[in-house]
Amino acid sequence: MFLLSRLLFMTSCMSSTVKTRNHGIYADLIRQYIEYKRSLGFKMEDTDERLRRFDTLTIERKENKVGISKDLFDAWSLPFPEESECNRYNRMSILRGFSAYLQLTGYDSYMPRLPKYRSTFTPHIYTKQEMQSIFMECDKLFVRRRYMYSQACVMPTLVRMLYATGIRIGEAIKLKHKDIDLDNGYLVLRECKNGRDRAVPMSLSLKEVCKDYVLYKQSQGARTETEDFFFTAPDGSPCKTCTVYEIFRTVLFRSGISHGGRSKGPRLHDLRYPN
Image (cartoon, rainbow, N blue to C red; front, top):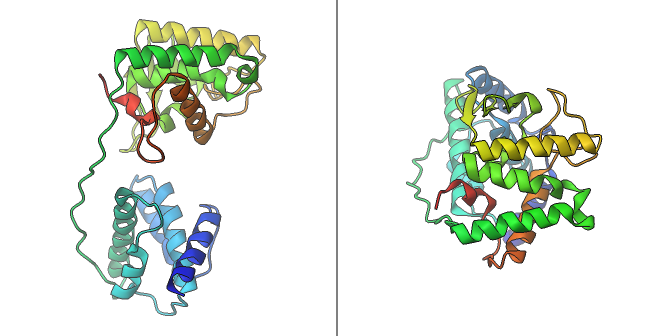
């Protein structure tokens, strides 16, 4: 019965999105908390989504009194199936922050001491030979009829940018043409973790790769105005991170680089770590 309850809760969590507005007793307080933190300059997309899931849990448990109890916090802290310790720790930390806010607004709310978390994950350090193979396979995708009119067309440029600059995939996907200064050789990341923009230099070779990519987009009739996203499919539709991950798995396979499975890598994110 307990397992069935957890599975039902997980199903409801997976089907919810940031835009979903629950109607539990914490719904309005969650909204106020998110607005308060955003007013201080924090990015709250992930926090918003996870607290909505927490609100779903309170509905499932038929909570009727505001104020997080130890029992409720422990229920939220139970590990999800195949969840990493890092994600579980982040969930607990987010709820602890919300509980602290509840205390500030006058509610009696449980404040646990979180255990110290140390990541045991070791990133894959790609060798120069592996990177040569990855670049080669990305270029092959670009010219194959099956992939050349899909999001795979971004891979030669995107992978080289991640490797050369150390930026994250999420940061790269959000870049617009106005953020790529091909004359002076730098790109601009908008509203980073501290809420400020950050300039990242590009190498001469990366500049040329980006110029060729822009020319390719223009040859396909894709928009390249300042407010248009830089990495798009030839039809102009923005790239999706999940699709890029899937294509990169194909690149790894064709490069002869074995993958250990989900959360084990090698990962696209590991391109940030120099060899």
